[in-house]
Length: 310
Image (cartoon, rainbow, N blue to C red; front, side):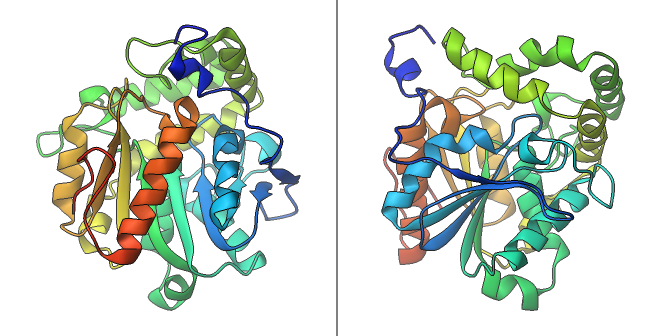
């Protein structure tokens, strides 16, 4: 993204009117950021990029939401924490569940980005309905596939072609050379053909460098083991997905393929955005998210550009 362009200006730091307050990790609870009061909106970050990436969503506090962005083990405020289950999606989901109970959250909208989507899906898959029903009203995903690996029955994994062997190689490289990999991994966040401003790229690089490489490697391997397609087919909690139109990580057919798993699942695409639309275009993302939630609440079909469907 060229400095001074509309895209780069949308990634400027949020105004001081909407800032998160930070709460450090405590025993078995992850650290988290919080802004506002009202209905809980729980935002779960992706692999190697902590909850600071949701700074632009603190502005949703003015729409009546209590915006909460926890940091998973090995990231940000929880960089020195390790889940009891090791570096696994189930372990991260357990930490989020404990935070939900510690904060007494009810009727929450849970939205996960990338790896965070798997954590959100794991919450829905791994907890009994008696726990879920009063606490979680809907589960959303941002630019994520339910299965990272590709195969004959699922060509919609990472880069449209990703194997368990490649996942193992990636994890080994992360353990040995994480600091050297950060620029390449960071480049995958942005829309195809765009680049962030130098300041924004530096900010993301610092977030990534603060993560625990060992935990990141474990989490990468565990992400590659997951297949949430059955969960999406069978889910009773309302589901929605938001995709970046120009994601470097996933091909455009992923949105339709994911929607086909669950007739009630709603899908929206953020025009000109990449893998991290909330970070690249926070205003457009926030508008799309609010419209998605409103549409689910009202039981109607609609969007800002004809891309939301049931």
